[in-house]
Amino acid sequence: MSQMGIPFLFMRGGTSRGPYFRRADLPEDRDALSQALIAAVGSGHPLNIDGIGGGNAVTTKVAMLSKSDDDWADVDYFFGQVSVEDRQVDYKPSCGNILSGVGPAAIELGLVPANDGVTTVKILAVNTGSKVVAEIQTPGNAVVYGGDAAIDGVPGTAAPIALKFMDVVGSATGKFLPTGNLRDTIGGIEVTAMDVAMPMVIARASDFGLTGYESREELDANADFFARMEPVRIEAGAMMGLGDVTKSVVPKFGLLAPARDGGTVATRYFMPWTTHPTMAVTGAQCLASCVLTPGTVADRLLDRPTTSPTTVVLEHPSGTLDVVVDFAIDDGAFQLNSAGIIRTARKLAAGEIFVPARA
Image (cartoon, rainbow, N blue to C red):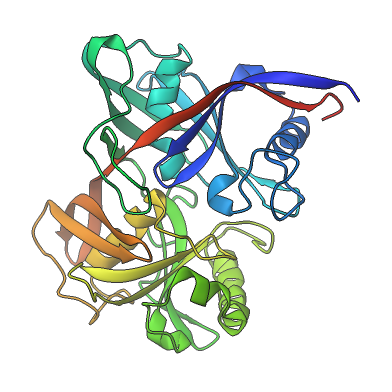
C-alpha cells in the first residue's frame, strides 16, 4: 500500500499533545482532511496503535497553521479534535492547550519571524473567531523551550508562554448566555449554559451526588454519573442553539464545588465523555467567567471576587490553573475584557508523518 509523507511538528502544548501541520500541506476538502487526520492519529483503536495518538482525547488533537489574511492576526490556527476510537474529527471547538504551542510552531514552521528576546504572535483561532496574543521566549531569534515555569499536569519546568485571550465571549453561539438565562433546570439538575472561549454546561457536583474532589479515574469509572450527565448536556446543547450534539464534543460539561486546597473553586471538566486529567484552557475561561458572574450555579460556592483584574484559581485533578480575568460588572451583568493564562510547550519531534495515500 503506497503512503504519503506530510511534514509536521510533534509538540506538547500545555497539557495536551499532537501534530502541528501547515494547513497548505493538507487536503483542502474537509472529508479528505478528516481521513488524513484520522490516519495520522490512529483513530479507531483504544491505543491509537496505528498512529501517533496516545489513547486519550488530550493526545489526539491536531493544529493546522497558516499565515493569516486577517488585518489583526499573524497566523490562523485551525483545530481538529480527533476521536480516540470512532474515527471522527470535530472541527467545532478550539483548544487552548494546543494553542499554547501555536506561537512556537509558527516560528519553527517559518510562518512568523522571531525577534531577539520575546516574540509576540497574534493568533486567530478560526474555529471560534477568537483572538489570542502569545508571547514566546526567543533569545537569539530562536525559540527556547527550557525555563522555570511549571504548570500542573506536566512534569518539570519550561519556558513560560503568556496567552492573552480576547473576543472570546459568544465564541460559538454569539451569546454570553446562549439560553438567555443565568440558570436553567434540565432533568432536575440546575445548570448554567455559558459561552466564553468554549460553550459549556456547568453544574454543581453536589447535585449529582458527587463531592467535586473525585479523581479522574474515579469519575471515569462512574457510569451512573455519565448516564445522568449526557442527557442534560444534549438537551442543553439544543437550548444553546447548537443543534443535535450527540456526536459533538461541544458543549463541554463542567462541575463546581467549594475549594478544598486554597483555590477559588474546585472544578472538574469533561471532554465530554471522559474526564480531563487537568483543565482545558478554553474551559478555564468559561468556568472563571461563571465563577465571577452573580446568579450562576457558582453562587454560594465561594466568596466571589469583585475587583478587576482578579486571579481565579481553579482546582483540578492534577493541581490548579490560574486565570487572570479583566472584567466589569455593569448593572449586575458580567462583562469580560480579557483572560490571561501562563502555559508552556515543548517540541518533541519533527519530520514527516505517513498516511495511506488513499486517505
